[in-house]
Image 1 (spheres, rainbow, N blue to C red):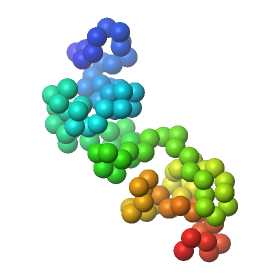
Image 2: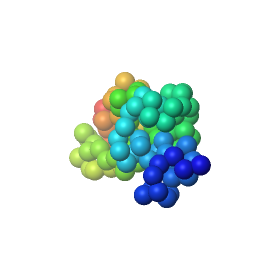
Image 3: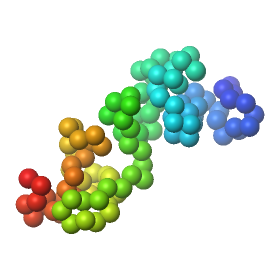
Image 4: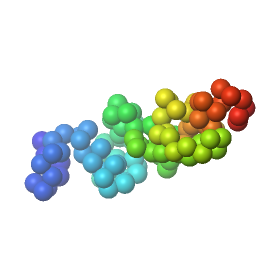
Length: 107
């Protein structure tokens, strides 16, 4: 079942369509649910299954994000490998990298 015009042959199912509109077009989950006619919770399920970190419908972090550590000043990928999680931060991660926190900075 094709959901989009033949100009987009890579989109073959609902899950691909959700990812296309969310990442490429930047549509909100609400707009995608209205456009495709599927529930908001189903769209959230597809995005979480694809590994997209969702903090809220307005704030989303996709792969490739980089943050400058406030302690050492290095540009590090915004992942669990380099930063501890912080649910209060907009990005979902602390502002100091793991190595700086292990030295006592940002505690």
